[in-house]
Length: 179
Image 1 (cartoon, rainbow, N blue to C red):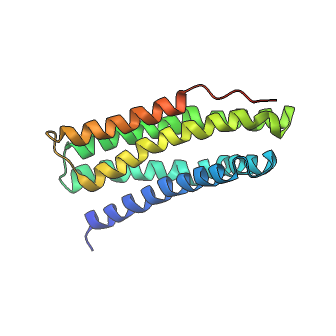
Image 2 (image 1 turned 60 degrees about the vertical axis):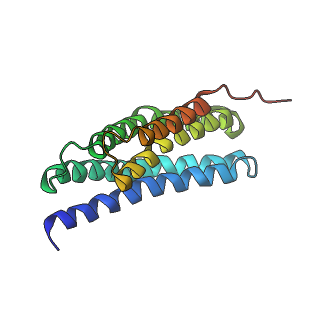
């Protein structure tokens, strides 16, 4: 096996761990939503904050590093899937570090000071933001598989529409709790 193939395997493995691990935590939080006590729902956030520096951040860095290296080693150059994939990875890694991580920390701090139930609205907000982030991550995976050319406007329009719809869904106001 040559170096480029080894690098490609490392790239895909890191992406699987990053995207798959994060998606699993989102799915677990959705399944627990409304079916479990607030403390059980917070357990997913606690696990995510433990996994972030141990799995998600290293896997995202390895995905980025191997991807950029493959640009040059494999001779892919600045094709749409590499340019947009790179932009997407930078966005989602930054979004995770600057928005999702601190939002999880704030929700946990709120739960510690005011009780688990008080943190539920914050957890819903984090959940919605994570879904938006994963729309971008799934778009990156799609780009890596399809490898469209710059003239594939329908593909880019479809990806853009999905990301915009996910952002609108994530950013819409949360319904008020009924008493």
